[in-house]
View 1 (tube, rainbow, N blue to C red):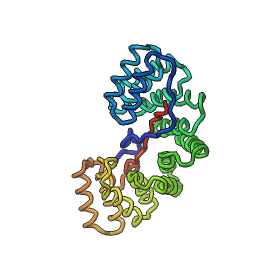
View 2: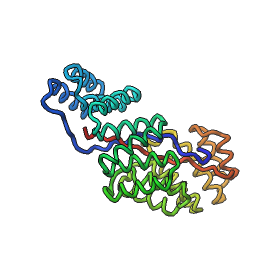
View 3: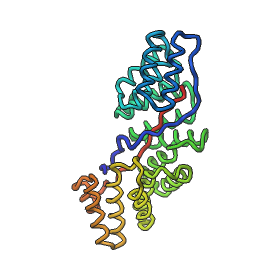
View 4: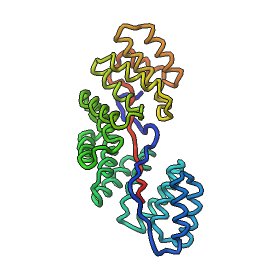
Length: 296
């Protein structure tokens, strides 16, 4: 739970697989191809070893730095990934995927203005749905809500089924207190990706603020009952939100049980108390999701 602030990050990283482009005519091409195969198999440490060989054979192989940077990002070695993405960009100033992925890692690290700078560059070079999504997410985290909505809308016009866009636009609309519109966007996201349960948390909170408490209980329960690893610590927030909804439905015992479970799952007791007391500006922290472009 946050006091009217945007969440930092937000759950698990979602991967968007697009197309593949490789370099050619390089002495490092053979280990590069081996690295790609290991990366496809999600064997990132083996892939990194092959990309190391590629770079040793051809230090100007921009794609190898980019791919190694993605592996570092996927294994949580974010600062190493930033170095590699930066090197790929130095070697190829028009390397759009490198700008996109460096910006995503900067966002993960809370460097939102740097992320916005990279994603602005990406959109100027290649105004695709993914680029607008990236930039919109930066604007969302920086509190530029109208710009975020505009970028997400542009993204959806270009690619209506791109994962996360309806979710994140819904978060921006929620923060603009356009709760009905937010619920609609969360619903679209869940229609397309019904197995992504964390979006139910966002929907439930918007429903709660619309005073649709029965629907809020239903959506919070979907989060609580999910066995998805994406839910993680958000299960505590779902218990708190359901408890708040039960309070408004005059189900005091159910509410108290949920509040206790929320604390058991990591909720801050003072923040929970502020929510229960209806302190102005307090709400359940919403979930914002991220994408990586692994197109090459």
